[in-house]
Length: 239
View 1 (spheres, rainbow, N blue to C red):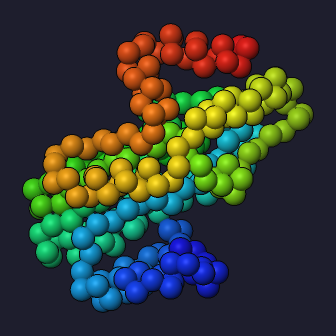
View 2 (tube, helix red, strand yellow):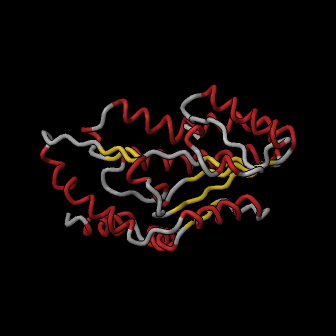
């Protein structure tokens, strides 16, 4: 984690190593991976779970926010994975679990940056499967729906510019859309169970959906054409 000095629970467990890892700091990645390998004698699974959400009209979003979004959700994931792969290659086994999102297969208004990163995670993961499977390394994708965490409070950066009146109607209504999305949120423990299954089931299955809301949304996305699905989202915004 980025601030292990603030941890009060996990660091009390005998079989857990808590160390600093900030996916935007390459030196911390190398140090954390080395510490984990030394402490436990190897690494069996990598879970890429760092997440940050930049939302708002693209015109109102700063370059800093754009870079932070991709640095955290995409570049950081790639850097951590590259650091762990030599360990997996050496032992001829390993599982990479990339936490995508229902938002890696469908989009919500004002989410071009966040969804762009999650779609990237999906493509990266699928393509990596070709090059890593022959080495005994599996790549799994977990797609959670709404989860009962403080992601919305701590990890979302919403940009807006009231001098752009054309977007303000959508900005005013999108909060309600997020609230309806969170109404059927699942507990974090559900995602942990899905991650555990992905790591341990020994199958070639790639994508794992976490949450009944995610299952329903993705079933609708798969069964409808673009215009029909997006019309449903627009209707919820009164567009």
